[in-house]
Image (cartoon, rainbow, N blue to C red; front, top):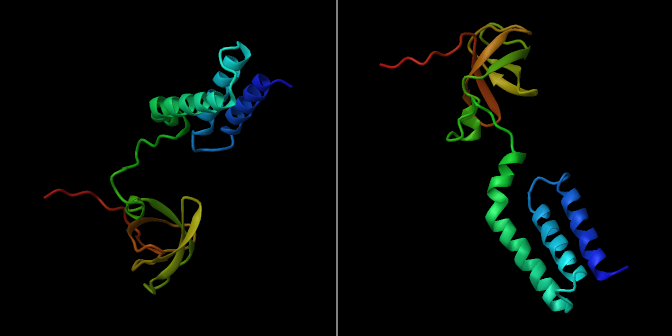
Length: 154
């Protein structure tokens, strides 16, 4: 098996591996390996140290020039998400479903937010299946209420 074919196979494997990864880096290493393999195949480079130098330069150049643009293709977009707020504050105002009742203002119960059950506190009487709204997030416990908060500007 020729060295050119090895470079090209390594490049193809790296590009395919990007389907399993989310870093969007292996594809650029794969491009560098394929370009190096083609240059070796065409007889433009022979020396192993030059092959590794070309591989590194091509990989680094494509990574620096195109990673930001290409990475956007692999990340989702949520129109209603406010990227400027910390994660725990993004839950404020979210709708949740009660899975353990909050009886007689006892305060403690459980709710489901984004498919995950959370311990929660509420001063409202909420029964299993009721909808509530997140008014605070203390990290591992949510505070919820029966009525949705309104944004009143004064």
